[in-house]
Amino acid sequence: MSKRPGGTKKRLKRGLWSPEEDEKLMNHIAKYGNGCWSSVPKIAGLERCGKSCRLRWINYLRPDLKRGAFSQEEEDLIIHLHSILGNKWSQIAAQLPGRTDNEVKNFWNSFIKKKLRQRGIDPATHKPLAPAGAAAAATPVSRSAVFSEAELILSSPVGGPHMPPLVSAESYVYSRGSMDGAGGVVGGCSDDGSLSSLSGYNNNNQTADFAGYLDADALHGAVIPSVSSSSTLNSMAGVSPGGVANGNATDELCCNNNNKNNPSNSGSGFESSTTQSSSNHHLPWLELGSISSCTEDGAGAGAAADHYGAALDELKWSDYVFDGGYPQYHQQGQCIYGDSKAAADAATAQFDAHGLGINWCLN
DNA sequence: AACTATTCCAACCGCAACAAA
DNA sequence: ATTTGTTGCGGTTGGAATAGT
Image (cartoon, rainbow, N blue to C red):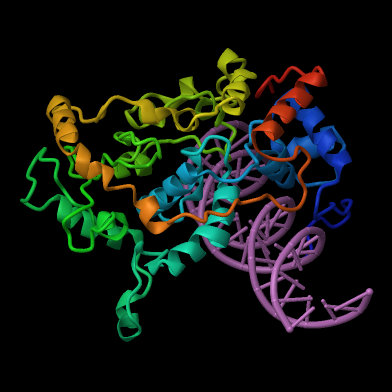
């Protein structure tokens, strides 16, 4: 570890945060909001760099963090989003209310990766691991390589424009009994041929429609507020990422320095995220209308989705990939609030108990 | 009980993008 | 147009907790 530059400046503290430091930081943010991190240590009386303060707040202190075990839905969603986005942890985390990019990243590296390998799936490519002889061919492939295969299939004349029964490369990997190519139907209806609708992500025998927010282009191009960013509270407040992907200006939703004193930024975001209980509340956009983002041919695509409902049920690939025995992913180390929802509630309560009205980004 | 190995989370680092001066 | 400062992101690492011997 190299020394920090600083010369005559007081040496900044590093390492784990003490409860006192946490309290100082929380008090400061409650008072002034979370802008201008460089000035936070000075004002708050912390011997930390602003960067460290920001990270501590984003990854640990924010009361809207879930801080519990990842649910099966979250796990499935992470795997799928990773298959689309690769290591874009912030964008993946943006789809998981209450989760940070760091948390998702750690979860991936410490748990999902391992599990996928055990199942014979290459976590880098989301394809079956090649046999030893073909190791060279199975070297990590870029996300674009995976996409190219998916796009190849999606753009093949089998379906043609707006013809739903398209099979993505991924579905070959994940769908139950799909290795023969018979199963794993993924609805696709995007005009640009991108994968835009998937199903089978919740465990309630519902067709989970990811239209819109799983559009790869939208995810890459849209400014999706990350959980780890200062403009996250819109997603915490149940704002559908689909709306973002549909091109709505994020500024009007975000809590950032350009949107001061927006009522939607204060408190309500926390509440909604900490009181979510059902899977669909965790993932509010799952309640989007069927193929809602299939712009020009929405009705036809929706009908097609119904038509292939049975096949879509086959796409509960999590059941296939993770056939039970899902261990709880417990937080380790420092945890000031305990676990899960109760923790988040407690955090919110604690914040409230301090009588600290949170004014986001007031400075 | 003592030691070692492994796991995994929190924190750090370097870089890039962006905005303001 | 350039410089400087700030923020955000992804990769990496330190070390506490846990498991194994």
